[in-house]
Image (cartoon, rainbow, N blue to C red; front, side, top):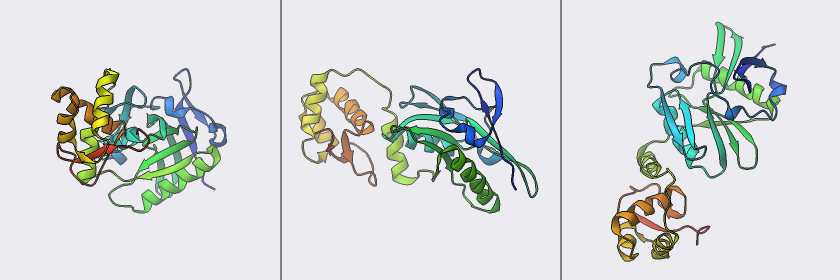
Length: 237
């Protein structure tokens, strides 16, 4: 029988080991990594952080690939909190000691916890073992396991553009209402900006903030430039 130990920081920021079943309800997503973060799956990579609009703070990312997944998680309205690498699993594998850090722990708006793991470029035996171990711990801890692919292509470019406007900025309510009214039908962003009566630079900035906030619906498979089509989202109408 495989024995898996789970290591994390407690509320006093001390490194502890906890049985999987005792992790139920524990807000690990709010904890820092148990030790310094490492590059993706031990490979050379640029360690970085993502400033999260969801949490109002930085999320640890072990690589640029993880950072792109953090961007996508940050854009998800169903996620209430994101933590980078706050837990480490250790066990004895067939070829020696093994360890795994789920890339992120997230809490949804309805209180569910997900261990998020980024799918590698090649899914070999090591990946399958990692996933099996993580799912075993998750079952005991009442987590869900979410396997994420790294965003790419036009979708990634659009996410990165919208993500540049994620920081909270105070906008006069009248100007936002005027711009939103200009998107009462699907039309190019530039056209609505010019028709809104709001100063062009401010309206352009606000339009992309509304995309990030999901108040404007766009076609994510098409470039999100000035002539991209957008309309007021159903929930915002």
